[in-house]
Amino acid sequence: MIVSCCSFAQRGCSNIAKTQETKNLERQIFGSTAKQGVFGCFEVTIGWSGEERVDYLTYDTKGIWRCYEIKVSASDFRSKAKNTFVGHYNYYVMTRELYEKVKGEIPSHIGVYVGGRSVKRAKKQELLVDEEVLKSSLIRSLYREAEKVFKSENPTILDSFRRRLSYEQKQKVRYQEQYEELHRKVSKKFGHRWYIEE
Image 1 (cartoon, helix red, strand yellow):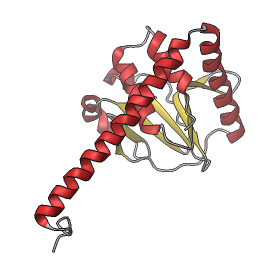
Image 2 (cartoon, rainbow, N blue to C red; image 1 turned 60 degrees about the vertical axis):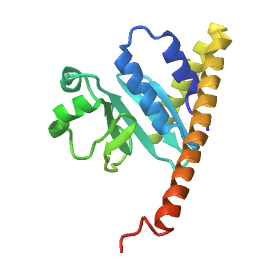
Image 3 (spheres, rainbow, N blue to C red; image 1 turned 45 degrees about the horizontal axis):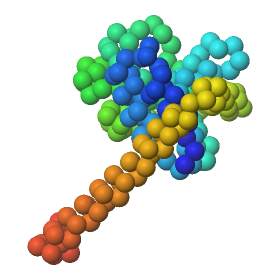
Image 4 (cartoon, helix red, strand yellow; image 1 turned 90 degrees about the vertical axis):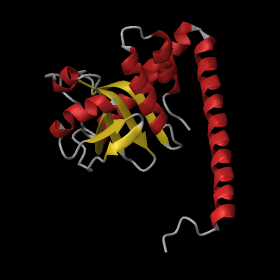
């Protein structure tokens, strides 16, 4: 799994300008997209001019680009600031409360993530920016984040991320074991075909 770990760790440790709610949404979408074959980075400036910036951009081994815009309030959602929806699939990332408030205003082709889960599917579109521009933008942004970590000379940033990753892996194993145990108990009580409607 190669996802922008340095970006995620750096943001969690030093970015005090962001609200806690924004950081929580960042962690949620990072966790949702942290899969093998998915590469991502926060705050990716599109192109050399820097006129557009996407809150979170991912690219996968199937060649699919996804853009995510993080919104923490109705005023933020409705602001004149441009949403950089240039990917094959584009999403808003928001709280449940905000989603319920603005869901009627969300375009049909834009998806939504709430609490780290997709609650509205995005529809595929053609890229609105040349793919080479997106690749170079992602590379520059990942380099920026790696440079921050390197210059900080602070090993605790990476150590913190490794501890978090280890914890999440253990949690995954624990939940899988709990699921399998519950499945065995239910199967024993109701039979192996308990989940199939007759």
